[in-house]
Length: 253
Image (cartoon, rainbow, N blue to C red; front, side, top):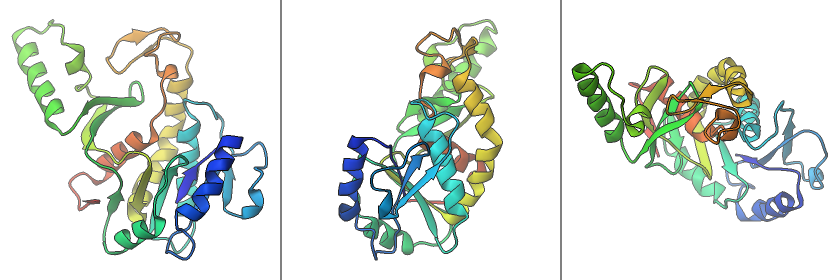
């Protein structure tokens, strides 16, 4: 379990309390705290900290890039059946999670489920939030019917957010505070992390006009410009799971 953390007094306080509370020692789980390089954390001697160099350790891209580094590193470690990421403001029973996952075979995604999204690769952001697939399906039907009657019709933003060639989904996504993937699921999505990281970073860093999730061209100062909103790694990873495993056996726990 890689806990995304930071080198700050507040994060140090959290790590000190998570170590005993999360029940990782001897429970079938290994807890690691994932930080960016730059300084040596005050608790480095604990031996449970891994650090990775990231090009952008800001609010928009920092967590996404660190999560990518963690998954690639963890996948290279032998002997683990599952790989997880967690927030440093969450408390969980790692032993109980390991026990539940140990009962299952085949591809598994574990985490809080129930919310659905689509993923927009034009703006590299989530779109079409819902509690099932119905919103996306209804939007597609509405767009097809409306445009068939009038090809120049202007569609509502709520519909535009759910249609388009650069959007994948809809899919349920496992969000925050702890998400785990069986090793075969992690192995399926990690190659796409490498392939797409440069483009995701470029879009979220651009100072040029760029389209938002509503397909509207925005200046870089606008609140809906991609450089202004966070690259949500949990939704993005769920999009990769959907794209790589749709139509194949998968357990969502």
